[in-house]
Length: 147
Ligand code: NI
Figure 1 (cartoon, rainbow, N blue to C red):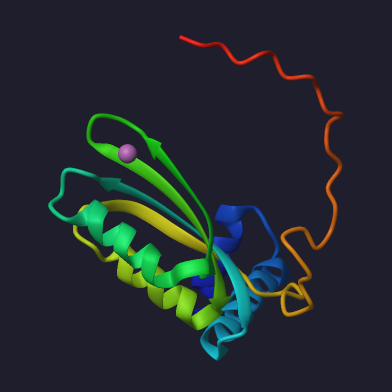
Figure 2 (cartoon, helix red, strand yellow):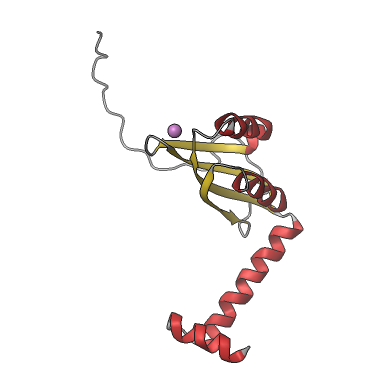
């Protein structure tokens, strides 16, 4: 076991203690996900939109999740493929379950989920912007062009 580990250490060009720290961190994250802490996740999928009912299923699932879906981006990659990034908030184990369900659908070619659960996400959220972001100075909009 240790020999196998040291082989990985050499491949990655790190030290054994760095490798062990990374493995421990990954296991802590997995344990947190299982325990269902509050989290936010970015689910990325690439899928073939010609596969029967897949687009409808994905849309239906997002409607079921309601306002837990915080944002979604759709990119028509090619004639066949679409890429979608879906940002979801909820309990980490639930987010993982949703991701597993989507990633197992026929026609989903690639995908993965990044679950962030080590931030304070449970606090009071007074409005759409709990904190301000600097914004560019307002510009005068060009007059709308009419056809
Ligand atoms: Ni598309």
